[in-house]
Image (cartoon, rainbow, N blue to C red; front, side, top):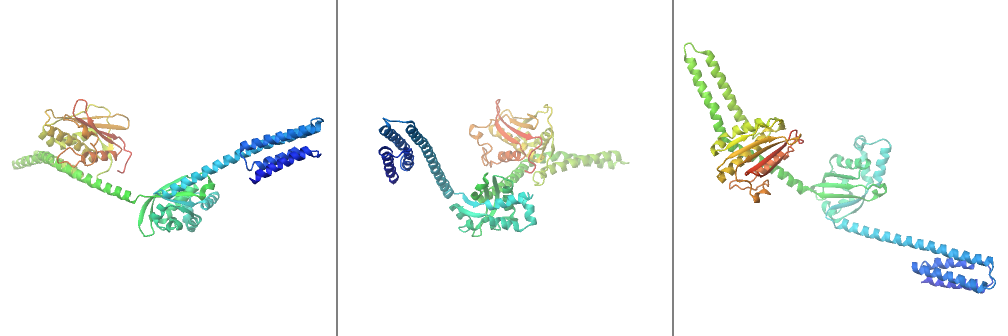
Length: 509
């Protein structure tokens, strides 16, 4: 109001002096001062009204004083006054536009800061704001001196770590951060604690800053005020603008329970895998008894033959030698059968080797011969596909999966009482990186309810099953970069396909 009243009074004074006094000069130019004072109290429209009013007063004063004796000098003074009013009005309008824009930007910035602060304070993720500007300047100075490996520099200068920690200052922390480490921890700084072994993680953070990275993320073992150890996922977002390093956001997510659960799950899966192997060996025991009967029976026959050749006079040593060689051959066969069975339970038999799929199928059929004969099942193996290379795999693992799939097919056909009992095993090479083994049966197929849960742990359609066989089979193949899928064949029955990498990507499963 004060600026407005002063502007009105000044405009009246200028008009009076310009109209009713004998002072010669561009008095009307002083309306510019009126405009500048009025601009402090009125809006853009009001400013235009005042400018128009001042222009009218200038013209009115000119008409009243020079209507009869207008000369060039007075006309020029009027034009100068009007031009000054116009230019001043344009500048004031532009200034007002800039002021409104700046006000809008400041309002948006305040709203953004309020939203950020609300998220920062209320989120359940532990967050800190830290000032890394000083430590960044220190690291950039080291880089300018030719030092690019902060770990090597720290080994040569042990005091560097403590110095860098001192350069990092605390700005703010939310409630979740105080709950995680205790109320005093954010102010002191977790990087001072001996919870990061040999400062390796802290040096990794410094190296990320020195290398100009925008994000650092790693698992870190920390310790709260009450001495409780926690495993957290530490994440730091570094700004691209060096001037913004005074407020760097550091977040921590407690993953202790998750890691413990994953460890327990891995241990349980390992135990279940071992149990599955043991169950597989148990199921194969009848087949082994049948398989061992042949070499053991042959050994007995050859022993009796050897004794008869020895009882001759003179003994037929050539025939004795042939019988002994056959006994050795059959003994080695029996030993190989037993060794293959024991290797299923051996935790150390996980070395990759070149496995011929044709030979694998034949050996598996030999092991399961008794079960197949007992159920009256005929197996057809497609050996006609060319260019099936050996795969680099753990033979026992593949054999276990194949045995499990064949056993499931046998049980499905037994339970359904299928009249036609056939298992077809086919091998093909769908591309240059994979080979595929399919096991198809002539049973009732997979029900609609079971399709989506077929490989889920503990899901089973058998009265005495535990539901881990197919789950373990899929996990075994996926650990080597393969896949296992099951569906119904268009011509009837179920078909399971093992897709294997010829050279697995994962060497340590």
